[in-house]
Each structure stands twice: as structure tokens, then as C-alpha cells.
Amino acid sequence: MRIEGRLHAEIGAGLLVLAGAARGDDDGDAAYLADKLANLRILDDADGRMNRSVLDEGAEVLLVSQFTLLADTRKGRRPSFMGAEAPERAAELLQRLAQELAERGVRVETGQFQAMMDVALVNRGPVTLVLDSRDRHTPRRQA
Image (cartoon, rainbow, N blue to C red; front, side, top):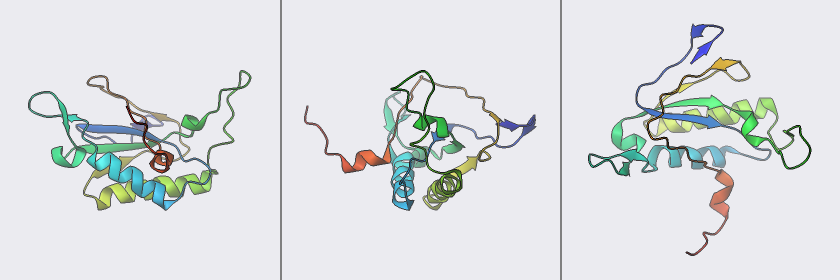
């Protein structure tokens, strides 16, 4: 990741995590997401099956603030960002997420909050997942 043309952060094999904070998110949301990111079995095992976690593989996380994930595009032609947390609180929550990941033994690099960042990605897969901490309060649907 580069900011103003200068290298700011980089990782080896691991996850690029684009994270946004919604109004009302708290430290519990950061802890929940850190646990999921560290332990979710989404990396390939020796047989090429998604069966290994970031912790299993010693993989790294590049954590990038991305408030635009909270865009509401249901009405009109201009996205609304009213669902995004206020910048000061969002910065605290993203810092908390990075801290929670580190406490679990994950090497974490971060972007710079509210900076224009050039993020490069080599995507093997592609595999893209959406994790929402609010989902932990919703019962699973039976198949």
C-alpha cells in the first residue's frame, strides 16, 4: 500500500481486509471480527481445499479502512453514508480491530485512516467474503 507515492504497509501471504464501522458498532464488534478473521478456515490446505485459518498458516492481515462499504444505494443515484460511524469513533474501532488481531497472534499492517491509499492486491481465487458483526445476533436459517 502506498500513500502519496511512498510505501506505507505491505504483507506477504494473507488477507486484505477492507473494514468499515457502522453507527453503533462497539469493541464487541471488533473482537468478534478479529476472532472470525483469525480463525475462519478460508485458506487452502495441502489438497487445495479451504481448510486453514490465518493462524494455522501464519498468514498476515492488511487492514484498510473503507467507510464506503456502508454506502446505502437503495434510493436515488448518490450513495448515502449515514450508516457509517463518525470518523473519530470509526478510527478508534479500526484501531481496536487491529489490536484484537495482534492479541490473537496475527501480524497486522494498517492503512492510514482517511488517507487516499493506493492498494495493490494479488488475488488468488478469487475469494471475497463479507463479514458483518451484526450477523452474530441473527439466527441461522435452516437449509
